Every structure is written in structure tokens, then in C-alpha cells.
Length: 350
Image 1 (cartoon, rainbow, N blue to C red):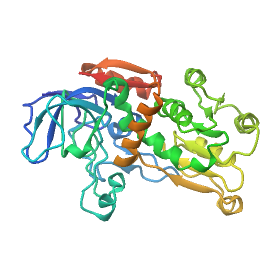
Image 2 (cartoon, rainbow, N blue to C red; image 1 turned 45 degrees about the vertical axis):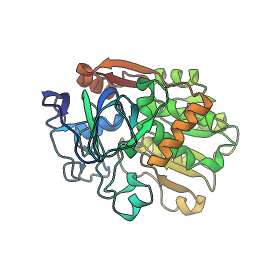
Image 3 (cartoon, one colour; image 1 turned 90 degrees about the vertical axis):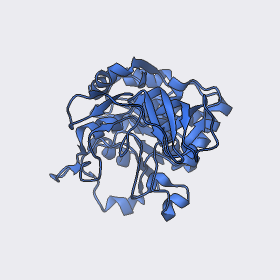
Image 4 (cartoon, rainbow, N blue to C red; image 1 turned 135 degrees about the vertical axis):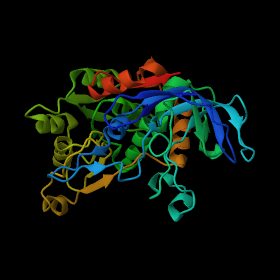
């Protein structure tokens, strides 16, 4: 089995060849057909998050991320072997892998919200993921039937798809009017597609990259704004044409959080998804004075992922732009993402 692993934080991915594992218990072995390269992989590869305000960076090693690690949490694979206790899938089935796996035992997991478990076993983060030609999944319940959807364009649904779907649901009460979305990368383009399918008015997309703004316009954004423009806030509010009540920050740095907060009217809601890093920029008295809700959103549940797949199929959603790369280009793809060279998603195809 060939994999590309993080063996040292910020170091080049290392090609590793080991014997292909055989599944035991309820495990399922899949041959990887597609593995998305996500911005979260950059944070894992870098080993932490910037907390801002001079704080010590948040160390992933201290949070239980151990090396060597095969990243990749946007994976589609073909079932090639089953453990003796695995049922519900068959050899040859093509499945999307739900990676946000918890302990399976706590109250949160039992309620179906494994992505919120405090003892996570997420594939590609705490356990080996899809930057490989094979992946082992602990139970068939984490394998979602794509029913003919293209494996390469469907792979991002496991993260960018369900992440944006879950975030949009958190501002569902405001979808009858324009919302503002910060970041027009893979998540932002996915959000535009989902907004339309969910009956939303649409979004004003804010990004500092002209190519990404152009891509957002092609995908149906109501308007785009350069977040680095000195009058970005005024542009956002003018293009909204009225009070803004919902904003989704897919970047998550001090600049986007400031714009996201400032553009909202009283009673508005800012949902923060991105993990770029930095410190909170808001003046505390303004939070109660504007009655603003600031909510974090972390990926999505298994239930939401199934809802997303059903929505994609029902509404025949067009996929976001993807760049197909060979597995051997995993390191190059990660660096291209870091340098902002990718539009949409890079997907590794072993």
C-alpha cells in the first residue's frame, strides 16, 4: 500500500510503502478512487493554529495528532475487503467516506453528532486518511452511497460540502435575503451551489484574490468584493441593498471576522468556519448592543452529510471546479494550495 505521510510538521510528505492491511471486526478496506486536498490539511501539516494576541500557537501534537500521519479526509473508495463483523456494504461498492468519527460511546456520539466528540478519531487527522491507495474505515455506517455520482467531484462533499451545508443551515432564517460569504475557495464555491439548491436568495462573495472572485461570479454570486479594498465594508453594504443579517466566514482571520461583524445589522448572525487564525477583533460592548450572535461551525454530522448527498442528487447540483492530480502529486498539491494557486479543489486520483 502506497501512502504519502506527514513525518515532520512543515516537512515534505514522505512516500511510504507498507503491506495493505486486512480489515478486522467491523472494519472495511477500500481502494481509494479520489482524495480531496483541503485547506484544513495545511493546518495539520503545519502542526497548529495561530491564536493571535501573542498567545502560544495551538499545538496539534498536544491535542493528540501523532506522526507519521496519512492526511486526507475527503475520500471516495471502492470496497475491496470486509471484516467478519461488517455488513451493509458489498465488495465493489463505491462509497463516500464520512471521516468525522468520534468515540462512538459518549452522549454526543449517541445523539449522532460524532463530529463534536471530545475524543475524536477523525480519519486523516487522528487516524490515517485518503492520501493513499487504500483506506481502512472502522464501520460500514460511515460509508455513504453515491449512487452514480462521480467519485472525483463528490469527494469534497465529505468536508467542504458538509461544512458549508452545516454552516448555511445555521443562517437558514436569513436565506430569503442576501447573505455575505468570506472566502471564494473550494468551500465558498460549494456554498454558492448549495445556497441555490436550498432556496436561498444568494450571496455576496468577499475574497482578496481576483481569480477566486471571478470564479465566484461564474458560479452565480450576486456580487463580489475585494476584501482588501479600503472601502470593502461600504461596498459589501451597498451591494447587499439592505440590512445584512447573515454572514459566513470561511477564512477565519482577524480581517474577515472584523468585516463579518461590522456588516451585520442588529440581531444578525456571524458563523465562523475558517481556521486561518488570529485573535478576536470585536469591541465587546458592541456584541450586546447589536445583539449579534457569533457561532462556530465545525464540519458536520453524518446525518447532515447524508442530507447533502440527497440534496445534490435531487437538485442535480453541478460540482465545484476540481483539478485532478495523481497521488504522487500530493506534496505539490498541498504547496499549491498554500500558495493560493488552486481554484476550487485539487483531488488526488491514485
